[in-house]
Every structure is written in structure tokens, then in C-alpha cells.
Length: 339
Image 1 (cartoon, rainbow, N blue to C red):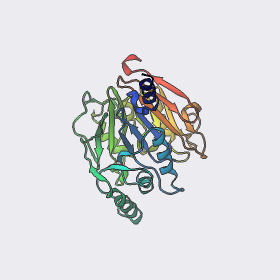
Image 2 (cartoon, one colour; image 1 turned 180 degrees about the vertical axis):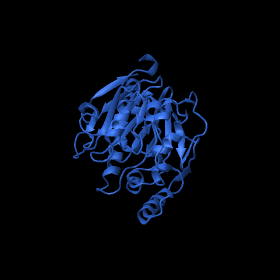
Image 3 (cartoon, rainbow, N blue to C red; image 1 turned 90 degrees about the vertical axis):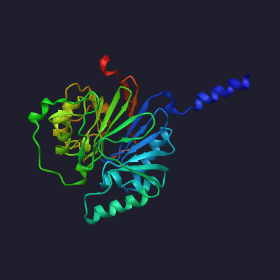
Image 4 (cartoon, rainbow, N blue to C red; image 1 turned 120 degrees about the horizontal axis):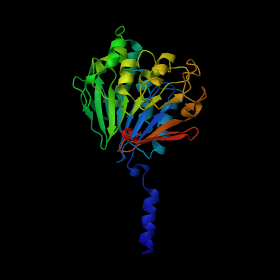
């Protein structure tokens, strides 16, 4: 009997952290790129983008450090939103440090200059050593425990509204289109990730006109609990028509110290209807104190960043908790219908 009790205690204390039945999301500081790690209640993992190459494999090392903290020893999926250096550049270095099951992307780069071509070739060389899945608008990433819906890919937006969405968007009338963007940014894969009644949106670097294509004249996305700032919080994205229509309760800005976090975009996010808090991976130096979040909600206050991240743990009822790894600042948000 004593041996049985000891065995039971060992199982409890050694159980993986994902046994708590939460969806855990880690927003990793990769200095103005993107690396967002999703860990499902079943322990399956999906990393969205891999940050920059170089800097002594800085971003790959940071991702692996966070993965270990999350109890992840293998990345089941690595989703590449688009083929720019700060999103796909870290793939070769990351693949040397942690096994990757399946790469997910939109197919081919639309940019053909030498730098873009070399970058894409380096990615493909690594990608070809694993499984590969090309997704289009309307597809799902088949990861156990969460619903990952592709709402944009390869320049195309979903034509059918998500369940419960599709209402006319009043903010379209005051948000005007801009010049067309021919770059990879406009090709970004955008996903809405749902876990029960909780949802978070990540649109990569999708630019202004493509954002409008998702929500104008009708909002095909509906609302979300958490909005990851598109394009690092730059004004080329984060159009009021989409941010206001999404009505996020919390926004997370993945800016760097001197990249992203523009005053215009931060103002749009801060004034979104229903917004409770904005959390940032960096203090945006050029945005000014009034546009940045309060200090406790910012992971890194200067350029001398350490290995830091924002952790979000979501319950299936729609409630969630966010923690700043730098200072331990934690805040819990009740489900939307209990606010």
C-alpha cells in the first residue's frame, strides 16, 4: 500500500503542466519578430513563426527555453505566416535544437529578389526534412485539442463568415483603403484559434487592405478575447475597422524596442471598444509614454532584453490569465459573459 501511495504521489508531482486542462500560449520576445507557442491541454504544440536568424541563434535559443518551460520537447507544428526574415529566418537554427513534426505555410514566396530567394531556399531545405502542409483560406490546422481556423492565406480572405459572425461593420465607413501591398506581408496566413469559448487571433503581418477584406462590409471574423497586434503594432496594419470590430478584451503587442508599436496603431488598439488591457513584449521607444502600456504590463523596458515572454492560460469557459515573466505581474480575466 505504501508503495502504491508513493507511486501516486510521484505521478502527481511529475505530471506535465498541460494536465491542468488549459490552453497555454507563450508570446516570446524575439525583438520585433514573431514566435508564439501554443500548447494544448493534450500537450500538443504549435509554434507560429520562428523569429530572426543570427545573433548567435538568439531567437532559436529563446524559443527552446520557453518550450522547455512549457514541457514541450517536440514541436508538432510550426506555422510560418509568411516568408520574411523576422518570421521564417530562425527555422534552420530552431530545427537544429528541437524536433519539428510538420511545417505549415502558404506555399511559395511572392518576392523574387536575391535576399528573399536565399531566405526561402534556406527554409525549404529545412522544411523538406519534415512533413509539409500548405493551407488555404478556410482550412484548419489539424492539431488536437484546439480549433485553428485559417481565415487568410496567400492573399485571399475567407468568403464565408465564421460561426456567429457576418454582421455589418459600422467602422468600415470611416476606414479607407490604402495603396496595394505587393509584398509577402499581404500573403500572411491569419488564424483564429479557439479553445471552447476562448479565442485569440493572429494575422501575422497582414496589411491594411487585406484586413479590410476580412471585415468589410460585413465582419466575417466576429469578436475575439485576445488580439495579437498585427504586423508588430505598425500603422501599415491594425486598421480601426478590424480592431474595433473584433472587440478584443485584451491586446498583446509583439513589438521590439525600435520596431513596431507605432503611436497610431497603439492608439487604435487602446481605444478599441471593450478593451481592458494592453500587454507588450517591449516598450516602444518611439511611441511615447502615453501610447505605451503601463510598466507592469511590459516585458522588456529597454533594448537590453533578456529571455522573457508573456504567458496566457485559457480555460474552456472563456476565462484566462496572463503573466509577465519579467516581474510576475498576473491578471485574471473572467469569461466575457461574466464581466
